[in-house]
Picture 1 (cartoon, helix red, strand yellow):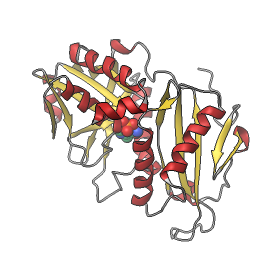
Picture 2: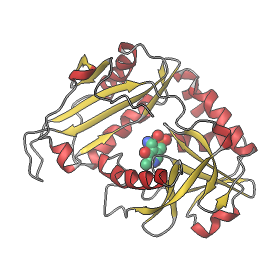
Picture 3: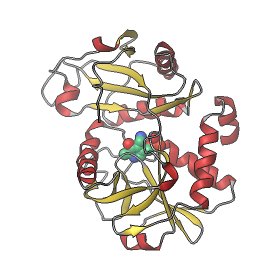
Picture 4: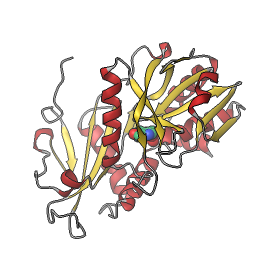
Length: 298
Ligand code: PMP
């Protein structure tokens, strides 16, 4: 696969309040965020010129920062406007948008109260994460587990938590899988490396309770679509020995959108009617205007 490095592309990146040419959006190697993972980010998708659930992403960015003990020096309105300005500056209507905030270089010990908080926002074209969607992807079962909430700020979209995700995903890809299903510290089913998971048991939709991993914006969106279809939605602890009993399984996330799953380790699934209904409705919803999306959520 030919990789175009992310630091050598055309376009504009919003950095600390100003649009800068893509290749000039740099930070110093002695940045607290790089050494100690004092960094949080968002992943958003723009469809037809609107960023889906933009304010919810901006609010989560702020919450993530707060959980790592820092405040973003920009208002929600300013961050929303900057995200929109970035896709416009890059001439995009459909794109992935990546805000990232981190502690700067003023201190480089563990203590960090006097570091400046930086915020950058980039956007790039990123079509569906997994090709041939209805065919379904294959998931490995990860050795790595989601940590106890007292071991890490698990409700934050903190860069540090993705260290485990990268280890799990690299191991899965090395074995020919698309991604990995991760259990939590107790051994319960948690989520994939960058997406939440749903199962169909006896025609009802089940998903793990997000008590030590991200309660995704797509997860909540898909649950409300399902309820609009009068489906029963159950949030509960799901144990690995239940996996063979599910008839359908799928991942959801801003990047993954709704991605059917056809295998999890030794277990097979057939992407079916429920997955297809939710996938089609999600694809239609993300292309609606923000006002229509809000109206449907009300
Ligand atoms: N879990 C993890 C670890 C993720 O990285 C993501 C993607 N942000 C999700 C779940 C899904 O979250 P969302 O639907 O808000 O994108």
